[in-house]
Length: 244
Image (cartoon, rainbow, N blue to C red; front, side):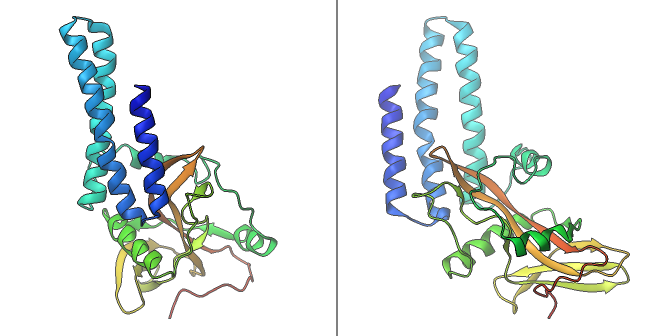
């Protein structure tokens, strides 16, 4: 078992040394996870032959968990699909943004003032908007339009907290009803959700939350999502406009 962990750790360092894009490195990690999964299956088979049923059940559960996450990651990274039984979506939905407490930066005074005068506006997102979002973000990263952290050298999220999504548009389609659109540029915007707001909407920005991160030397994945902020009533802070 120690030898297996050493091999996996060595491959992990090798992939980090190559500094390939997150899309392909995550595919590599997914394929790499086959090694411990097959190893656990071998242990399960040996326990069954020895009729050690208590440990068989325990290792069997570990094997099922590994298979479950392999399937999730395979669909997500290779087929760009979310599985309906993806429990990680529950973590994203119910845990606060700073649940992992791995951000190293502290907001400056100007940024802090802006967010104190802001409130998050609920968005009724389309079911699979995260698939479009991850594709757009990867393109923006490749085009150097979104700054990323070198996760091989420092811990934290790949994309800093409160990074503004560069291409979005809020379109009013009826009184109190808006469409939220995003894209890789302003020419190809796609609707990802709707906003219902009775008061006049004064956008501050659309911000990226989540993504790959490193904590204690281990790389994790949290699905990307978006947070839409608007000014609270009476706020007079000058911010970047979202409407053309």
